[in-house]
Image (cartoon, rainbow, N blue to C red; front, side, top):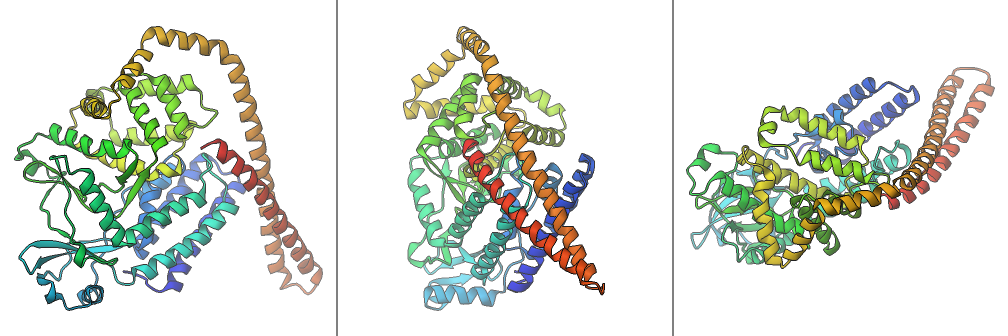
Length: 538
């Protein structure tokens, strides 16, 4: 692991954050045009990316998570970090051997006939080695990287300092992201990933959950020789889902594999409980028999019973083309802000789901993705912090499915899978009711009711938005003036050091002190107001 020195890591990350904060405020004070802001965010993203690769550790994972927040972060910044990979050079074998023997309290040969000394996989938190037990069974040995606990704790301290400054000093972007909640969620996920005893329990949970499905394979674990720093699992051979040539020789078609992936992940996303939050192509393989193999359960998420209910209703709404109900579900889940216009969102959902595979094939998909990200930022849409990892899981699997079956329509592939799942859940009549509600006669009644109430709703939304924008502008303008006063005061203090007359020096100190106090008072008031707004926008 590069740059283990705590002071060096703190200096490099904090200096990067300070420069970014100053650049943002300077551009804000000068009221730079949109084109120059794009250039600034591109440079910030490039520097951020360079620092992540230099320091590795927790920072790579932070970058991966931020790359999913196109609803909150500028597109020029996202473009610089959207292909981050968690691959780092393996550790020295002698250090790995010490971790293994300290964990087991005995020499390696007491448990293993042999262990390959070269890692077959190496990431920022752990490494995987191949071994053979005394009974001849081949196993995968997952070991935490040396000194990783210390490095992660240092990174968390650094991140907490940056979060404090961002929460108090940085102009809040659209969507009013709660930095503290995001930090707590990130910390919870990483600390869970650092404890292999928790991952062992997760593997046992998933084995129990999918024991009745013959299309999925999850490796068993050897509890007796696993520790919080070492996880020993059954060795599983599989084919990457990106290996098109190998997949052609499997006994199942690409469309069947895509549907099986949906059968495995749909219950995880729609039922209360735990879901796999990192299903990239290195963690989701396919066996020679065509079974879906799930690996690496370090990063997981949780779905509450209430959220599961709304997600189920949302999918039912899409399948029955009941976009009015879909918008209602999105409001309850917190994806739409209160000022979002229901009819506009219904039309957008209808247009979005009306794409034909042939049309998508002719499009520039990268340009379409960028356009969608711009649309998300322009619309009253946000991704609630509690769904960041769920979104990561969904988007990753969607990408794998589209790669497997590019000619097939995602909705058509998923419809039989979802209906099969509904039948198992006993929710068939709920789906029928969704379909009935989407019938034209019901839409007419809904449209008439909404038309009659539209003037009053529009007037209320207009007043709310005007008050919100006015108050936000007041806070931002006040903070900008005070920040400019702080800069002038600091410049005056620096100049006063070289001038014999102490009046300039004393006056500059006074101006700086007053503006700093004013800035923090204004920030405190804005924070209280934003906290209220955030509650309204969940």
